[in-house]
Length: 267
Length: 307
Image (tube, rainbow over all chains, first blue to last red; front, top):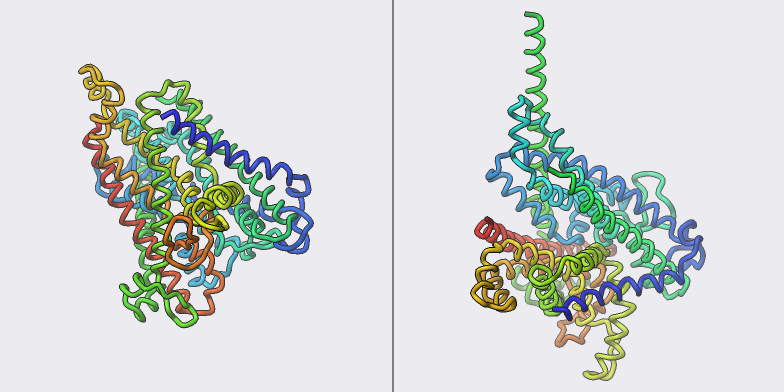
């Protein structure tokens, strides 16, 4: 068992070490502050600011949208429906399935929807698909946090004459750390997902100025530039991988911190 | 009277608010549940042209892949997917099972403090990063140190490389599922076994595993469905050569990689698009079935063992 543990640790260290050692060499201020010069695939100059900004746009917008859609669903499942409701069971099952659907399928599906509505690869398409992708994650993680919510508190609130809608305020306060963790997890998943944005957001050299323009993303910056025959471009891929890893590590560590820190204050 | 009327009115608005919220939330919930159906129908409609032209059986068992001539045989891709998934599970299963047992049965709390964050990190890393790792570490390793024992030359872009990368990606999922399953077994059962003089390992084997084997299988099936759909990391290390792999050092071309690689160019040919959509449909269907079965098993288990 110790061996199994050591293997796991070995993998972690190997992955992180690879990314950091390659990325650090390639990293420079220009990388994160400049657009790629002369095309992302062949141009030797510049960095990948376009990908950073594109990722931020997509992840920011879809996180907000995802929260707006999934918080009501979680509340509905936990406060409005009875504990042994068939609908709640079906819904949880559906979200589990959606959670398991590979992102490439989301990408393909999103692409067909976009064609149906006459959209081309664009920032908007990326946002829509990533939103669809992270909603199940949001709902599952928040639901997990809410399910352990003591029924007594609900009863106490109801018995004071509060409607279910008003009770939500009580619930919201209690599961706030859960929402925060879910958000961080979803951001982590959203920012790292390449397969779904490949067809929907596309890839460009510039920063998108409107919703209908294609947008570059960090994972695709790694993926496309790594295949380039030019060493400078490959270096850009390494640096992008480093940025992506650092972002994800920060998210992961802070979500664990939040869970540890705030679960103490829970009733 | 006036005052009473006012509260009455307020009461009404409160109830109306409550009901409106309920309706909106119900609609949102329903829409998100229907997503499953919509996705299935959407993919099916898109892949209908190719299904009309060729029989389902022929699509799945033919190994002719000539999009230009309208021949779409998915066997090489299906076989590649199965190979890669098999290798990945072969690597991930023993490691994750032992890790999960260790964490739930043996480990002291200070050990857990190190292990859980490590697993978190593994789970959080995006698949592109695993792809980079695979290209930089695993592929050269296979090409230089593994392949020479079996053949003259290999680029390293093989089933084995894809399997290792996928295996590592699946480990955190498996471990967290196993831990969930194991912790649903009540402490009393373990304690009674220990009290009878069984060692910890005996308890693990005879009580824990026997009690939770449906859960272990279900968790593995879930992980399999996860592994099947993984795209970017596999795409980067699999070699992308069409053909049925004969051994673990052959290059391969799993279904997700096929979709990802050909999506851009397919628009010009309706049949090609339909075929790729069919590939997505296969993936979706397999994942759907696997997920449903294993989730039902896990729910049941949780209910049965839950205190």
